[in-house]
Amino acid sequence: MTATGAIEATGARDAPAGPWWWPRRRSAVLDVSLAAVSTVETAFEGLDFAHDAGLPAWAGLLLGLVVGPVLLLRRRWPVAVVLVSVAVTPAQMGALLGMIGLYSLAVSDAPRRVIGLLAGMSVVGTLVSSFFTIRQDVGGEPDFNPPTWFVLVMAVAVALVVTAPPVLWGLYVGARRRLVESLRERADGLERELSLLADRAEERAEWARNEERTRIAREMHDVVAHRVSLMVVHAAALQAVALKDPEKASRNAGLVGDMGRQALTELREMLGVLRTAEGASGRSSAPVSDEPERLVAVASQVKAKAAESGAGGPGVRSEMSAQVAEAGAGSGGGAVRGGAAVVTAEPEGEGPSLAELGDLVGQSRAAGMVVELSVDGAAGEAGYPSGVEQTVYRVVQEALTNVHKHAPGAEVRVRLAHRAGEVAVQVENGPSERGAADVGLPSGGNGLVGMRERVSGLGGVFVSGPTEAGGFRVSAVLPGR
Image (cartoon, rainbow, N blue to C red):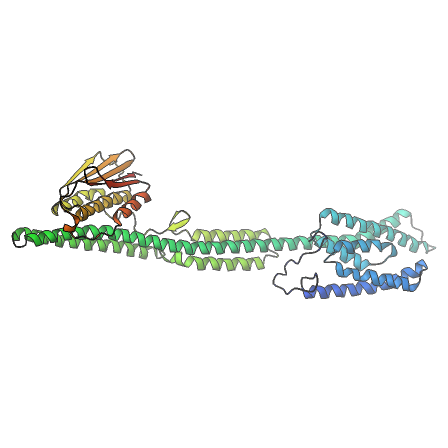
């Protein structure tokens, strides 16, 4: 309602706009019909009033024709309608005008004190008018002379019967309309919220796909680059000694074959892990891609519930909230980092561990590299999480691969330290007497980046850079828990 007490067009958002202040055309037709009936009523009552007051008949008729059409304003200015009905009450006019005016005022959003004041004025006006009317009618009966208190009781009853029902009914209808409108607004808010959830689900799906592609590329790089680098080194040695030392050439050929088989085995294991994770869950990719459609479906259900919420009351709100909670819970198919879901395809326990560092160093030694491995301390009884051990292994593996590529012939020191609550690893090589061109291994420039991403992803610290002696050092510290 506006400042003048106008009734807002609630519940008519999808209906065509009516003329002037009416929200719909049928509302205008209803008010015009009521105004016509009220005009006929007040016209006849105006003639009776003019006759009783000794006024010309045309004056009473004119008064009725002016008062009756005021009912057209009941939706726009219900306060004015009630004031006019109160004003003509002493003339015993506008019974329909007063009742419909009080109903329209009560159903509007007018302040309760305004409704109470105008309803009280209508009660007083009707009471006074009824009192004198009943007393006059009773006084005309010679055989019936009731006491004054009886006439007063009758007048009060008439005033309450005429005034209370339209006010109470209007208050009920107004409260119900406001409840329905509140539920509609809540349903619209839930629909907007679900739409935002659907948009965020699409963003999370795209982010998860990019994250998974990056992770697979990093794993492929770590596995293939190291094995192929060793194969290239052994192939170069095989080519150099093929004619001079057939026995050594045979050993190098066997090592090349072993390296190739190990590379294929690790690739098969990695692909098997991805296929197993996808097939075991059955929803590793489906929930992320199907989540937007599911949220939109829930939004449609919520809107349908809102359309039926006229008699639903607060229970509808709880049911809609439950659907939103269910929709939100259905979108959590993975860990959450920075507001987005992280899909992890590699289960815990898969991949290399710290126990395999000796074999990794031995492979580089077999390729002719001088590698020293030292371990300080010992891991606790519980050991480290598999992700930490895999990361330490991959850091050492990538560092040795880089030495094969960029510093052939350099001596390498690998140090592993078990500390309180953390594990540290350092791979340092000395200067190389030969250049990288002697080996001929290509470099994609992603090795150090991948190591840094792995370590940082577990909350560790990664440092790399050249040493004063002309070599290169790679260090990483990871939390043990």
